[in-house]
Amino acid sequence: GGDNGSKGDTGSKTLTVLTHRTDMDSVFKTYKEEFEKSHEGVTVNFENLNDYQNTISTRMGTDDYGDVLMVPANITKNNLGDFFEPMGTLDELKDKYQYLDDVNVDGTIYGLATGANAQGIVYNAKVFEQAGITQLPKTSEEFIAALKAIKEKTDAIPCYVNYKDSWALTPYVNGIQVEMSGDTDFMNKLIYDKQAFLPGTTMYESLRLLHDAVKEGLVEEDPITSDWEVSKQSLADGKVGLMVLGSWSVGQIKDMSKTPEDIKFMTAPATHDGKQIMQIGADYKMGVSKNSKNKDLAKEFVKFFVEKYPENSNMVSSVVGAKLPDFLSDNKDIELVEAVMGTTAQAADRDTVQKESLINLDDATWVKTVVEIGLGTNKQSFDDYMTSLNKSWVSGIEAAGK
Image 1 (cartoon, rainbow, N blue to C red):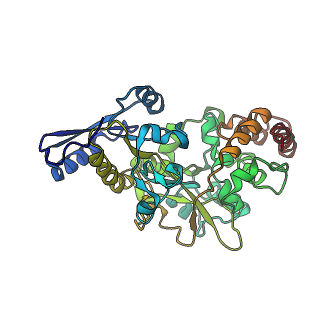
Image 2 (image 1 turned 180 degrees about the horizontal axis):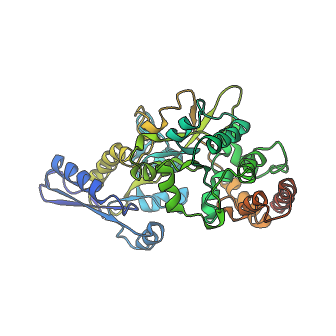
Image 3 (image 1 turned 60 degrees about the vertical axis):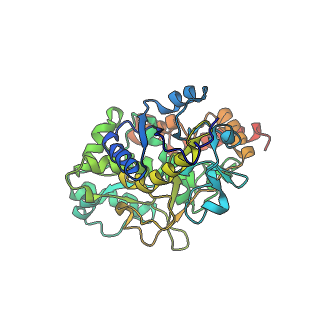
């Protein structure tokens, strides 16, 4: 058992830190050096794991899963206390740290967010400038108009959709929804909405953005053979105008660009009572293993890490009052919001609705049909497809007994 080492212990201590970032060795080396310098006799060892989620789940079947680690996404709230040491109470931590919802169990906090990401659209500001776009689009119509301006006035592909990778289509159904609807509770209400895909709804509107961009020839020439790595480089080089993607991708694209300051981020094209919102949500949380022999030291390291890491990974800091990353600096009039956490009951219902309807919001394979309709390779109309999706969704709601 860990007794945190007796207070008079001058012996050496080791902290093992497990992360999912296999690409940040040099950055983590500076963290190690800095923490060791200010903590005499302490050695910090980073272990950056491939296939983090599976690897860590196996490790957590034993008592040995490091001192400090990223909290795996598959650990439900009620199990946090079985594996993690409390970081403190909500009252103690809430004035200093944001994004504590996922790790708050009845007022006890089991980890801190290493940073947060925004939902929306990554764009190349230089391409927008060349196309004469002086105002970021605030409606669906302005969005399509902006893409048309890019097509007419520049050599860039207006919008790259990455049809081949179904995960890249997910933001159209499970990314920009809060922003398109203006409702932080949208994803929870959707589970019970029997009009979910019909004209005038948020889902219809966001999928129509994708359909219209394809239909009007405002995307890559052959979406079927699109390539994620190539698309990032093209956006970095100003050969693509924008991609609907979370802000987690901004750092990767900036790193590939000779003019990283051109890579910016905007919210979805929708306005509610004259105002736009941008959804922000926590990335991985970091916590302390229940089995650590150096728990107090490990907690100190977590706090040290979350202060520094967002800047090195182009994320929004979870520290209250920290300044926004520069790529968000054009969004002064936009309110940052967090989505409402679903209840356990809603999560169960969502599961039933998705299984029964065969419409999985986290796996956008079914969204490929929208692209195919836009290309004309699928002969049904967009409205017909939306109607059939709606029918399936309603059958899922009924299966959930709602």
